[in-house]
Image 1: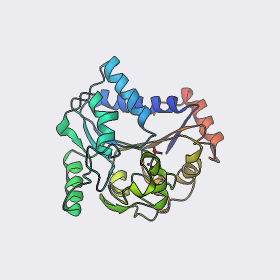
Image 2: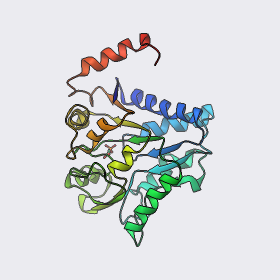
Image 3: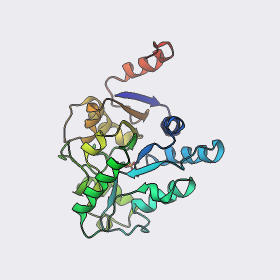
Length: 260
Ligand code: PGA
């Protein structure tokens, strides 16, 4: 796992966006895994800027979103369908038929989840998966005790997540209790993982995920099992890391690192 610490949220988000852009420059038909939540917003803003000002091209890109609430129609302002269209898709030249987001309104969730996994496989797998982290250490909606080999499925949200996300709803009672989410195993299948986290409220979860034991109690700790994972943090989110000095040392020495 590589830890990249920047002074500000904007700076860390720019770096993460540039990583996505360099993948697209190398592989214009890349498959991207998308995340929702407040954290990746600045990554999307920077990608949109690069599309407008530097002709970053999404015409051949396919995307798969991590998760969606069950029961919200796609045009509900808090649905992840709505979020993605408003904050990203409508601003870039992505082909609508290449956008996949789990359905929160289907009659057969089990069949839908299998279909979603099949579409990821058929697309050739996810090249780069963007991830946030919940204050309970979750990735996507893989709440504590999720199997580390889980696949896309229906999940009951933890009270902590409902409380965290109630800031977007009129009150906690309006937050859906169920969601469809990629599993930890689905996420680990991506070729490269890019996690973004900022703010003091994420510091504890980040320390547990990055430096604690691999455990299904902190599903983000599964990143430790991935051969190619990069975690972008601001100073606040990095504030509880014990090995901070080592991460700074690595960054300081990088210009003189041997080619590898
Ligand atoms: P946030 O959500 O970016 O809104 O903090 C992260 C998450 O729950 O995965």
